[in-house]
Image (tube, rainbow, N blue to C red; front, side, top):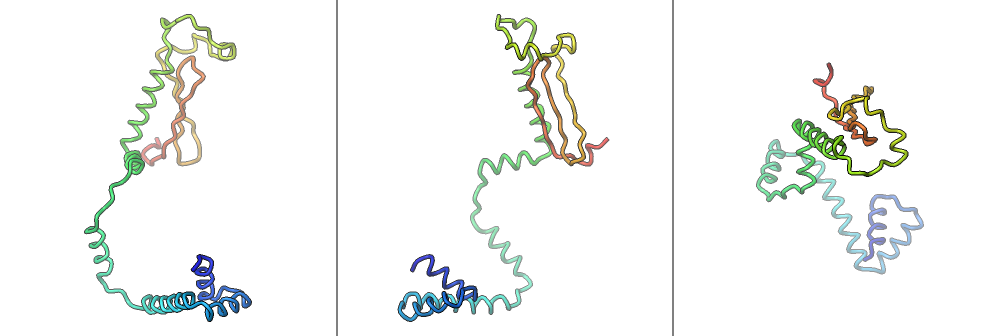
Length: 176
């Protein structure tokens, strides 16, 4: 039996077939014993479901199901699930912000003594801020106010056009 035949039987069971299609399928039921057997099995399943759905559940039904779930072998969560669980903890935001800050510090903080003779591209040299605007050991941090429940924090290394944008869920305790 093909998938299309099975879908046709299920549509006929639901009463969703056009009359011409239903007449053709009923004619096939007479000629094909396997299709007719599948039709009887679907009708039996539908009647058993109707009876089963009308039955009242026992008061301890949920407790029994949960007991069976606890006794069944559990599959350990994957790496991505574990990472998402970690990131949902309140401590994850400070750790991630510290890691981003350390990465920005290590990569984007040039020192005056690190001149190795490389020239900056002309576009970067034209658009870079003046050296007196801020000290080389400072990092610009800007918080952007917005009407959503998301905190937006922009970190920038002095003299660098690169920016790190940090988004986090705003908590009630964040409001000052």
